[in-house]
Length: 452
Image (cartoon, rainbow, N blue to C red; front, side, top):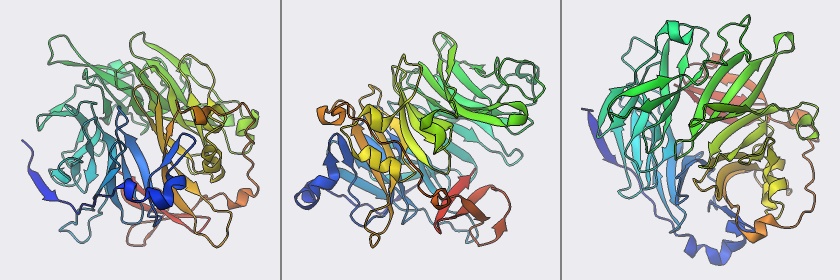
């Protein structure tokens, strides 16, 4: 069993109703609801429950976390868990949330965050476990465990407080040396998605299925027909870094963000939609000459998928500009969110901030959640992050078929790029390192990035 330590976190209940009189226009407009953040603390949504009742994420000003009940307009805040080791990296991240308001991530050690009890519960020691995903009902948690001898970990499923290792295929079956693995998401039927780590430190995607005996898991590397462990591979797709898989709540669809080697011309970074029931994969291949990508870049990342296979994410670049997109079920091309829902005019504003990040979609595909960076026209106002939820069935969101202006990067030198890397103690780093990294951006701002 886990060594479990439960502690009360600082809790704040905030009613939107009390703010509506003065901030109604800011909170809901044409299908868009923005989370109340009058002090611009930087609430950034990183997860939404499949039933769209809860959203959860980070507070940039406090480095803490939050869960927001969209139905009852209440928020619960969670403080960073102070460490007894003054030199330890302290970090809180919420990675996924179930329909009942139970979220998972870490707060130093692996942790659960309960909206109903307003408590954070940590498990084991720091770097002993990693919680990445939780099933819609909250019955299963998936992630990895670390025993101190391996940096990449062993994939695990956690049920009733007990960790259980997931099986790994042999290296001969995989076609490369595996240095570890981790599980990332799980459906109520216990289908699990994740990745392996090969000897090139890339992350080919995989799944685990629960067999009919209800006890045995079978690993199936979905990337095996496509992943090439070397650039000289003769496989039809030379795929690298097939990681960050996200599964639909019903366990049918899997989103895989991949990198394809293109020889001397570099590589292509995009997303793919995999049907677990038919074993078919659909790669989206962006055309760099397409006007959508000409100004912002042609990298494409998927972050959420509904039960019918609709995908949301962003295109442009990982560190900006980011433009929100939707890849509807059954369609071959992605569509800019602001174009798909022209009545929700704030979507275009988010894109103009160069960091619009749709990160989740509800199981039924109705609601899409994300965060964005806002740069006010008034130069005296501070720039800030905000979180938003789009109701795609709101008639006002559909609006008219009027054209939405394309993104134009007026001064590309002003688009933030990574200028320098530092550790928490201020030491300069040449590359991202394990633990918390401080990214000093070219626009003068600093971002925090955790490498587990």
